[in-house]
Image 1 (cartoon, one colour):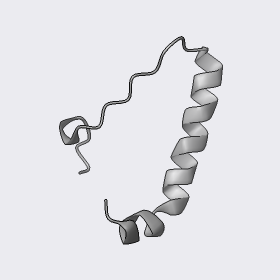
Image 2 (tube, helix red, strand yellow):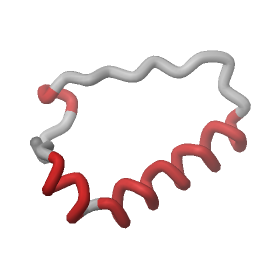
Image 3 (cartoon, rainbow, N blue to C red):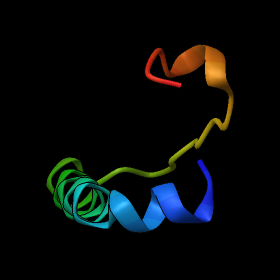
Image 4 (tube, rainbow, N blue to C red):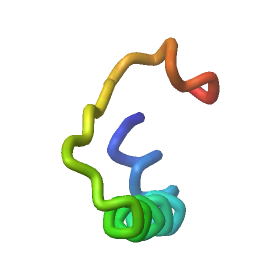
Length: 44
């Protein structure tokens, strides 16, 4: 995602971060593994 695309999608990104924060607190995770691989995201 380029810088311009990031700015255009800032609201959606912010919303997803808020949802993620709520889920982390709700499920009381011990660990979180983040994978940056296009194969896991069909929208790329």
